[in-house]
Length: 305
Image (tube, rainbow, N blue to C red; front, side, top):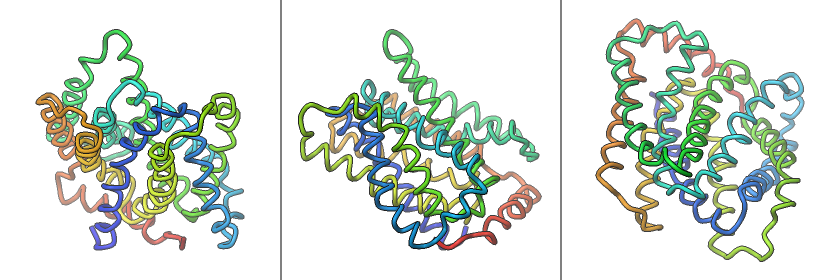
């Protein structure tokens, strides 16, 4: 990986490790639709004027179908479900379950036509990773804890699929206009539900700070960095920063919210992390060469932001 790739990777490791903490703080005082609307509307308000000034909105008309689909599976559905799930689960639990993204990405890639063979180590990685997810989720699969687990699985599925779509259908679309358009669309969709569930009283300063952090740091900055990471290293490797995200999520939850750090959480994290590393490994020189050849066009087609 290039030096630029490592810098982007490090930024994403932290930036998308802290949303779980911010969502947990904000959702105590506002509804899930209000939080998603505020996050997307503020992000759109920041990026849209910059996108208009840069003059990159015209290219979006030729890609509107995959653009809408990307907005749905990367933002609209996952952010609502993640926010709703954190009404019932801890922020660290949510971060750890979403950490299965690289494992799910391998499965999605095979279904979507990835020709790379899954060797024994990668199959073991899939099984170990899913064992970690099962260890973490099993105690919550009874009573009212079942639906939040399902919500987080759908979130992980969306996060695993969206980079593949972006790489195949949106590789030549500039990052800033693309992000601005997706956020604007999401804000319009959630505006009616947000109005209907608007809080009766002004949220606390802590909640407002969490919402602002979600919009500016975890949305605007995150997606600009994320699209560049996809173009720099490819869609499969672009999700590998999720190895670090759960550790950031757990530490943030324990330090700032006093969430428990149990042996089961530590064991599940080790299984998910180890399984992800094995499941996304490139076992042979031929496989690595193929991966590099597949990644080259995206690097060459990088657009200015």
